[in-house]
Amino acid sequence: MPRLVDAMSASKPYHHGDLRRALLDAAERVLERDGAGALSLRAVAREAGVSAAAPYHHFKDKDDLLAAVARAGFEKMTDYMRKAALAAPDARARLNAIGVAYVCYARDNPAIYHLMYDKGRQRDMRAGPRTEENSAYNLVIQSMVDMGVDEPNPIDLELAQIAGWCAAHGLAEMAGAKEFDRLKAILGGDEAFFSAVLSHLGMYRQPPPK
Amino acid sequence: MPRLVDAMSASKPYHHGDLRRALLDAAERVLERDGAGALSLRAVAREAGVSAAAPYHHFKDKDDLLAAVARAGFEKMTDYMRKAALAAPDARARLNAIGVAYVCYARDNPAIYHLMYDKGRQRDMRAGPRTEENSAYNLVIQSMVDMGVDEPNPIDLELAQIAGWCAAHGLAEMAGAKEFDRLKAILGGDEAFFSAVLSHLGMYRQPPPK
DNA sequence: TGTACATCAGTGAACGCGCGTTCACTGATGTAC
DNA sequence: TGTACATCAGTGAACGCGCGTTCACTGATGTAC
Image (tube, rainbow over all chains, first blue to last red; front, side, top):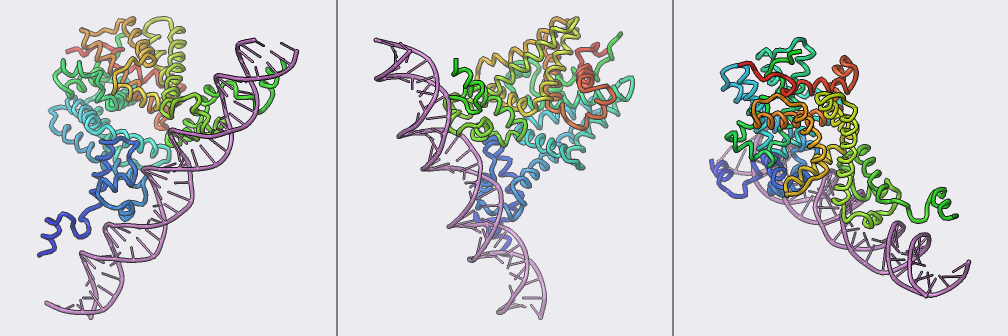
């Protein structure tokens, strides 16, 4: 089977193999290395080592590629979260682990996280299924329910969920800020810090006494 | 004084009057109407009704204009917050009012808020004074201190502050999301909803029993 | 008050650039006989 | 196994566009005498 060998060993293979995958990877690299402002279709093609027209055989247009990058990001992030959830001994630890995994993903891929959030926001405007994001979201909500967050009524439960979601998103966007470096060092690492911040959400505590 | 009259009544005045101010206003309008992607120097000049070269008499370059827009945003937001703080009867109400004002500003000016956050983040990368943002930030921190948030040690106090800041930012970015419409209606308005979400932060509650 | 002149805030044309996208093309791959 | 051919995944040149920025200019304003 000479063709397979050629394909695997030659530096410039026959066609490409899997340009679609290569373009998504290239887009992630450009995004994290050069920032969102530098993310053009041409830059992605350049990064992948193909002509500017090549991506059009795999994506309808620029927005289609960006949407695919965001989708891949959600999948990877959901994986992070699911793995973290599986390792936890009880519901409370699970909720915490999921939150930390969420924030860690954003710390490691800040530009992609930003793009994901933007795409999600755009999709909000139209109606739509949002299956990928929902699977991350549901993971959190389900853990809260499992944990039996101590809220007097369903409205408060929903508010607690929203507060948790907002804090996680805010922390995710600031995850890499150098203002946090001192506390991270004191607490013994990024994850300990994220965990500590999230533990200051109301759902981990008693409702006010009065 | 014929000149003053001319200046005030003519549709195309002598020079302009205050083009700098007009450009900042135009930029805000373009930003909120057409989105961040459409915010070019030329678009701003067009919106203000002047030539593409005119802004260069008032701003060094595009980034200088954007930075000025962000600065103006911080000033307006700080005003919002200060006014809200003054009307509050005690420290707890003050903290809540400040948070709600913060989120309301973001709801009313989502694109500007986003720009402000981006510019602040960029400034984080370099070192710098950040006087405008700090004045908003300090307003929150001071209220927390005044309120005597019940935390066992300074580390926990700082963590509580960070959690509050993250939740406020997250809620600010999602303030206009239509997912919240139902709860907003139930609770009797945007501000009641924002207030309710923020009240689910840990600092309003007792630390965990164990 | 009137005149001469420096300064200031605009204009409009032009520059080079990178972009998204299209198109006719080429050469490798997979398939039918 | 060999040949003919349709299909697929690339190329490279070209398009029109809006952008940031520069430049020589113009005309109104403010100032000195």
